[in-house]
Image (cartoon, rainbow, N blue to C red; front, side, top):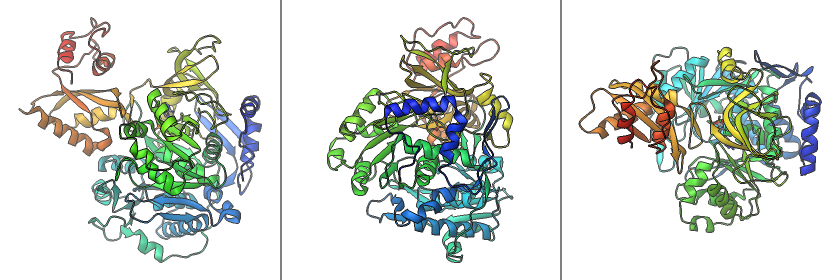
Length: 637
Ligand code: WTA
């Protein structure tokens, strides 16, 4: 069934947007009524962006898994909830119906309960893209435990930081995962993270790759063995408050270590379902293929919660787009008759480079909607996607959002509102963006010209973050203090006279590398851990495939005679501290960094040099040592 809240025309969109503006509470109340509640809420919205304190549907009682699974059992019990495509195309696909998903999630929840997991406990999940990962999230939600998924590419150190930050006493992991031609060990990395960590009570291990693992007595258990011993009965869903935390997901900011963004139950559920249904215009029976990893927010919201809440069929892919060859996505599209393909510009750019035969080999007629997310999409990639994959018949939805926003905030709606290449276009109903200048002054709408500024949101939406785990003040200073009374996104944007937004990218020290968010401060901290490093500065530069590359300027005290050896050691250090995704693309050794007299690194100059600009570096006279700029320009990588 198509929900009542699905928007059917452009006029409908404008009318509904206006409704949401005039009466946001009434608007969200009507939408929330289409979900399954154990008890209806008392107050639709209470909010204050200064504290910040945001409550949606306060007093309401529900469990998100009853909305994602149980309520579909009446009419969709045999419909596939999840279709799983393995890394290796010769291995069998798995199809899990809603009835089977219910059974599997209940069993998983019994296992967690039997091993002592309770409502409110934090469970860290470190897995590959297998159906059990989706089930792990849902089993936590069923029991009321808070999941904290860590992307499988992060290092032991990164796991350990997240484990300690949220004091997660339970872990769900697997022996290893397949990624293209490689086997990535996961449990061994987890073991490194757990050295000297005595608060972890249980580690559940899924067998997938059969790489050697050490199983510690009384702590580590094989998931399969546990599952075989539990009841087949329904696991009664824990009754949750609307504002009980559903999960924590760590994400990079401009300073310090990644912070744990907290999403709560009801608002997140309503937002992911509403945005999924409207942006993609999901129709019953369609196959939705989101290529993200569940380790990131896109996978949480548009592989697991949004689609399942709408009773959709969600396709999960274990591997990578270029294995066994660059035709893998297109093969999957044909094999499973995919209707909606949702991927990242970086994947599109990397596939564009390959021979078109990879596309023509497969019939892509089943596709109806194409989506992109994660970074600004360049015109060339947009056109390639639209022409070669969509055959000029599928709308491309350019969806802008963030880990913190829970779901899509600005996007065209497939075939409802117009797609404009490289523009995210219009806000969803209930989303009220504005642009401000450096001083926080609103940049007024201009009916003649395009304006630009820093992107903020002036009113809460149900899916927004509520806090950062264990440090509410950090949430306030990061998002609500820069411009009082507004949520600041960290992005810059332009807006045309018709109100369409183009997101231009981060205006803070956060990089977006292949759609992955990485803080420059994090990479610097990692590099500085190397004993030979005196100081470093990391900036981004334009990269054809990754969108942004990582450029590191490093002061090293005793360079190895072969600079490459030192570079290799630094890459190894970053891999150990953060993970391979944060490895700098370029490392330039320098004897000093451009600093102001007060000791502040002039990143603006370093950014320009990394971008290839060697003149017009701006005013360098205020620098402590203007000479250094010349030296850096000469040694540019
Ligand atoms: C960027 C990913 C341009 C943006 C869902 C944002 C985008 C950051 C788009 C969040 C888009 C995401 N166009 N930029 N369509 N979508 N971004 O938290 O800079 O991993 O702030 O969430 O990605 O990244 P995150």
